[in-house]
Image (cartoon, helix red, strand yellow):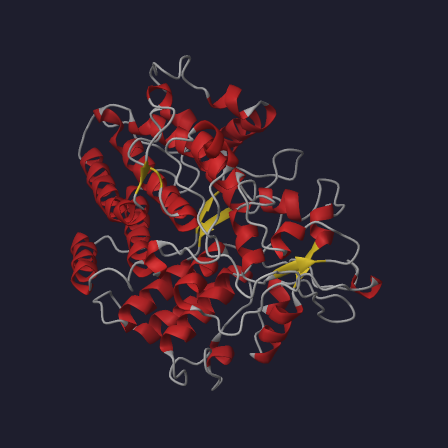
Length: 486
């Protein structure tokens, strides 16, 4: 309880003042003074949760791109998404908020002294988490010269593939820092201020290893097999293993104004119990409803709310009548919108198992075999949603549900990962689709002017204006793939 009250105090302060005012812990950004890590760490983690789960956040974008979510009759909220109008202002807050708010906090921790090795290691892990997302969205990004404050307000852009390679180095260094801090008697240890793992070193090292697996999986079709094998061997030799549950931020969300979980507050219900407009406006596509029903997938009632008249979706951009109003369609379900005080999940255990399944199937020596991880991934998805046992579901003979009966194992793995990240970390399935083309048969919006969906985001207007000399030319967002998809 003390942990929740402490971090909630930080959260309230964060939400009650402007980002610039609150987050300028240092009095002079060009000449940083000593920061208080127990204040900075939870702020960074709260920003991580926010950029992932807020309305028009990272998860939201993924659900739109992967044809999971659509628009209820009577609303005109998602025109840009349905038209694939990916310009310099399309979801540009993802770039801007990540650099100006989230990464800024973790960089403050990176600059601390030797006695703060735990904080520095945690910061390195979270920076790797966010930098990978930025590469996956944009390709080349500011990296080596980023986060230098006034010393370099116009950082160069680094090569995406080179960044990916360095992220593995940074994660390995983070593990080393945390272990060294564990052995240092003067080390300042996080505890209540760590809104993710409560200062548990082993959990942080396991998360670092898990992020390495995500990186290796994403690059597994373009990196030499020997490189991936060597990295897997390093992870195995380290010995701490991987996450055993969803990775989440819990700063003490409560059902009070300005203190709810962002997903709930912006896509669920207000403090007084009335629904927010974004909830009414957002529903399932009919395609995902039909897909889940076609697999006899019991998760449908947890992913999407079932109206009294039965599940009903609206395909993206389809012109419909009032029979597709908010009372009649399948809005975001109770497996995602659990409560105002629910934790903010930023990485699912299900995804990790599917990443392990893919690497195992490709012949890399990760612990466990592909089928075991495939089945564990499905069960982890059921667990997250509160859907009970997956045994009956998996026992079907249906391809892409039963691993043994799936002729294309990669398709089965990616398809189930798409279903598992549906509604929670859906950006991961967009990256996978660009990389693999699965799930097969995914439609494009009815308002799209192209038969292809975007494969990346455009560089934001803020960079075009403020970092003109360095920002690359705008890519073809439909055809210029991120390096791991080429």
